Amino acid sequence: MTEIRTPRLLLRRWHDDDLAPMAEINADPQVMRWIDDGAVRDLEQTAQDIERWEEEWDEEGFGLFAVELLASGELAGFTGLSLVEGLPDVPAAVAISWRFGSSFWGQGYASEAAHATLEFALQDRGLDQVVSVTRAGDDASENIIRKLGMTEERETVDPVHGFPLRVHAIDLTEFEG
Ligand SMILES: CC(C)(COP(=O)(O)OP(=O)(O)OC[C@H]1O[C@@H](n2cnc3c(N)ncnc32)[C@H](O)[C@@H]1OP(=O)(O)O)[C@@H](O)C(=O)NCCC(=O)NCCS
Image (cartoon, rainbow, N blue to C red):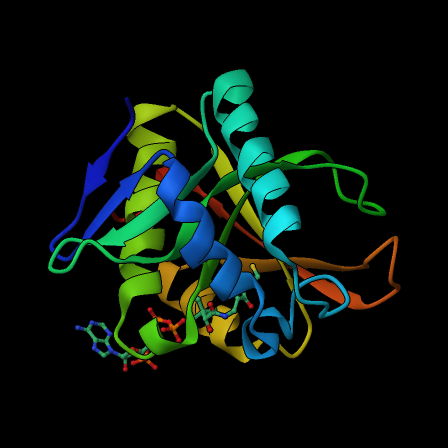
């Protein structure tokens, strides 16, 4: 079982009892503001998401980690890796992403989890490069991207919704883990 411990967090595969807290996170419009078209996701959609994330772990050997606070055992959100395909002018790549409940923002948890995820990508999975794909305007994500040392590669558009997207990348040989 793939698990990572950081000073404050446990990054792990998904459990059945993550559904309710993850659905609560997905139901918050503030959280979903910069994701796809900004629509919230209900309990059933969240259950399907978690099932898909677990399938990606089984198929690819990487995926989105459930992020639990070590101090309280609460699910704070997710951070992890997924395959991105089908973006105009962007070759298929492994992307890092994050989503935390708003009560967990502003404490450095997302950056701590993202840093551990890049270490996992490099040291455990042996990946050469990780990208991030964010909507233009998502300043909180850009702040994490900057702290990770990722650099802007190109702009593209969301093929479904037409929003401008920014693609950043890091060669993991450059990553100071
Ligand atoms: C994007 C998102 C994860 C960012 O969360 P966040 O809490 O702002 O990010 P961080 O973990 O970097 O923490 C931010 C701040 O916590 C503060 N902080 C407090 N205690 C800290 C500590 N012990 N260590 C580090 N930072 C700490 C820092 O000031 C830091 O800000 P700074 O880098 O400007 O100094 C969050 O806004 C979110 O979940 N958004 C919705 C989902 C989303 O849009 N995802 C993007 C699609 S990829």
